Amino acid sequence: MTDDLQEIKTFHDTLPGPSATATAKAKDLLAAEAVAERTPRTGSGKHRLLLRMAAVGLAAAVAAVAFLTGADGGATPANAAELLQEAATAAGQQQAPQPGQILYVNRTEQTWMTVWGRDSRSEVTQEINREYWIPAADPDGALARLTYGKLRTHTGQAPTSMETPGTVEFQRAGPCTVNVLSPTSKGNLPADPDQLLARIRADAVASVRNERPEPGTAPPSKDQIERLVEHTVVSRLVTLAGNPFPGPGLRAAVLGALSKIPTATMRTDLTDLAGRQGVGASIRYQGPDGWQRAELIFEPGTYRFLGSRHLSEPPRGGTEVLRYASAVLETKIVKSMPKIPADAPEAVTC
Amino acid sequence: MPAPPPQSAPPTAETDAQLIEVSLRHPERFGALFDRHHEAIHRYVHLRLGESAADDIAAETFLRAFRGRTRYDLSRPDARAWLYGIASNLVDAHRRAEARRYRALARSAEVTDVVSHDERVVQRVSAAVMQPRLAAGLAALSPGDRTVLLLVACAQLTYEEIAEALGVPRGTVGSRLNRARRKLRTSITIEEPS
Image 1 (cartoon, chains in turn cyan, brown):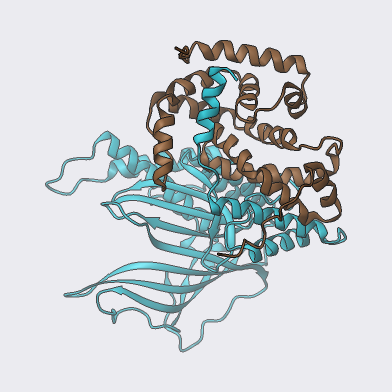
Image 2 (image 1 turned 90 degrees about the horizontal axis):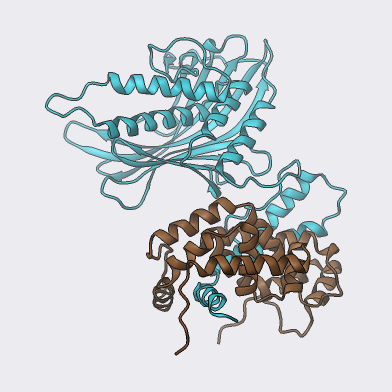
């Protein structure tokens, strides 16, 4: 071998081999494929997919969905943009509820909160189960039922002002519709991804520029303004993606717009709040208090939205902290809304 | 002494072709082929796309090989060319990322991968001495020429094997390799033996 080829070979040979984790993952995928092949082909594609996933799950508790083929037999997306496009397509193919029908969504959430008392400060995590009933003909008349779950105190004393586990609360959820833009923004959101992105960005620019610095502080630099705009755009799109109100067209547009966010990266090792493994997009952006990251999680193969996670880094760096997690447990069409019990507190507006 | 991992392939003198043939009836036996070649395929992709992408693409290479093993030419005892061909095709889909990687490496001698073993650090620092110049040379090559060059240098495949792996005539392999080496020499200073 001549010197130039030898130099490449030498460099190549000094590279480390695969990590034990990577090797185990790859081998588990292969083992799962072998199990799936042994499954009689009389089953549905979804059945084989589930078997393959189950085999991988048994083989190792690792992200095992990286190379599964889609439900339609298509290849796994190569990057976050492709994945979000797949999710947008899947969302757009959902059937919208017809007039007279009511969309029911059951979602569980976990939120990290800082609770301030008179002389105290506590950091807690609260679980909430949130059910929505959204009439197709009258979204403004939507109703939400919140059932408060576990409350965990991480720092400080357990706050007394929080709802105790088991508390049920009704909300008039109509105002929670897709109005995530500033109050001055009017009109419906466009169902075209590019137009939607442009609209949200324009609104974010206006919102950020309208913010007045606190007395005694310097106005934000151009760079800071750009970061704030990006933060606003991403957080609004992510909020919309997890919002139960958008119909198939707008939901597809939201995911399509997210596919154009350049900082989105594909992840195959995501787990939602309900413990379901999924594929998804991780979007990192700089918030006012440091780096933040949003994860949108989808069911492998079908790209059904499973949930989301929001994490933030401490201002001086360190381990990310989970600030919010959600999992959509059920979505279905129902015929009626629940009645608010007579002895229930008055339904508040969200 | 710890017991061997249960999924490790037992020592065998079977050829790759024999393993593939057996795997047609016993799919799980394909794991032995994985055990033989996964590390090499991973290292090849690592050079071209980085460690993280290598994890995915090396795994995908064996999945595709498994799914396509019914079409494998069982008269060829060594499956390396077949596997490198699959890996090269997968890498080819990331040609822009590959070019970006070489350009980035060419701009900096820093070792950017996370390392956790002292020996690896030593090896990489040593390798990094020539890495930027090498990377600049590789960045300047066309994807087709680069693939042939790297299959010769890293996998040490013959012209015939590369032709088989890439599905191109043997003469094309030779011309691509000559062209690649001519371009590469403009970027790499070859030390003459004293």
